[in-house]
Length: 146
Image (cartoon, rainbow, N blue to C red):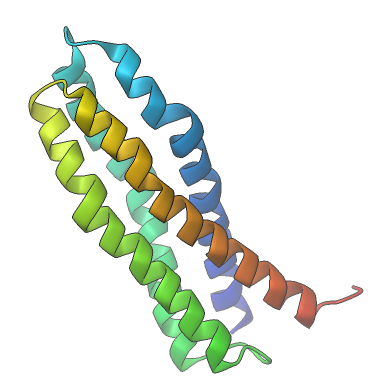
């Protein structure tokens, strides 16, 4: 159970750092790429991002589900189900809001889609931040002065 929690902690904080970078730096810079090479840029971006994000998102999802069944000591249902709910928000937002915009951007430069991507990505940024806070609360409750 300790290993399970540590895997979740690492994968969540990896994604938390990455999503803040994407929100503040990466997505806003899409608008500066320009029309000329944008579709080629976006297609390469999607492929490379999959390798950087996919394994950690899957690890985070697997450990989140596993912790529902095998929670670490002191992690009650409120913690586990809040974590599940926040992760569902992330995955639903990704599928419903970000992926469709990325598909449009893979075929053409679309400033409106870029703005929509930046705005809608706040859903994931806030949800992952909530997951990070939740895991820190558990960590500090479990190991208060050690």
